[in-house]
Length: 421
Length: 106
Image (cartoon, rainbow over all chains, first blue to last red):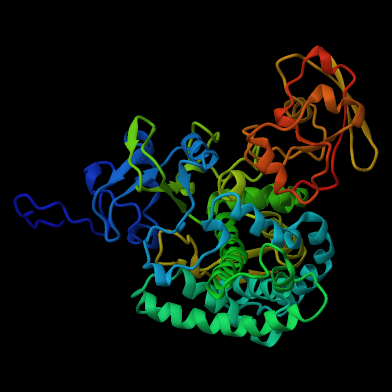
């Protein structure tokens, strides 16, 4: 226990909450955005504490400045419905990156620009188009599964979760298949915290992402000079609302589409295996009745909540849950908390693959910013489990997963498994 | 009380007696009419209870509201007779209403 004496008058320093007792830690010392408890998998009781004791919580001091945390399902719905007061600009992450490092992207825009840009690319993940992709996804899934080692431990994240999502991204962008792993690398760089292993600074991040821009600019020129196609680059290059985007806005939207198509699905693929192993009765229920796969997919997405929060910024003074939010304040909407809110979700702490109203969760957000690719994510997960079940009696987790050092992306770098026929 | 006919994309019809105080979405969910997901439970924030109102009923049902409009606008399948069924309150004036369910919810 930290026994340092606070200097008279100085604010308490926030630091990692790892190892702290969530029920006795003073509320003003709870900094949910610190990645420590997320990587250590100690975050759930802190979410419970704040929902109970301080559901609209102000953290006055964090490494990235003061911010509000909104913990309850209904409060988050209310904020997301009020785009006039709770703006998605300038950024949906907690860090106020310097303007020269901020990438414009439609998720971090407000109407009407958000709607215009989003509509340009939305068709690629519309259900009618996804129907056309189903055969390809299934072939890819089968190839990946049929090449997995038996009777041998391997990292599910690398061999399945990352590989499948990388291949899908390459398809959506009609990106050169042999370079597909650049996509996941750029996705990881874009969401990485400097100093946590992948990059050392935001400057370095931007240098790498500019390589991404350079690569895609070449693809853009190719697509712009051809008739419109069905891939995301072609849609952006030909769309009236996007064809004249400045380079940094193009990069921002690229990163949005890459991260959006990668993290949610990848970490749900991993989180699903872990959840079924931790809830063997549910795994058996699934084996007994594969028709439950679509319902299980929704429950996995709720349970994992691959993006733990989204940020909004107050455009004017307002009140929420009895608290006064000032113009300019950062407001974090904790989907990971809402999805465990017993006032909105029955038996929220139970992983229940055939729960009633299984699609009612906030993992995809709500309102106009609801995750554009939600149907694609669900389809990949559905097809994966449709093909896992006939092949393997069990995907057995053989050790502790390693979690990402982030309070934003809630996911895994390693999940050791062994396949049992 | 109003009788509402839901026509699935494949043509299957469901004729449901709906009490005043319900909306077109809650009645569909309660009676297990397929094709309406209603992920947000009726808060006009997911867009997955999209229906097409049969032309003769458009005037009686009325146009989309302020919060409904942006959600419908983001739906690639949106048509002139699109509504979010959670926002259509049922009254006796809607007795005989016909709505068609799209092939997909977005």
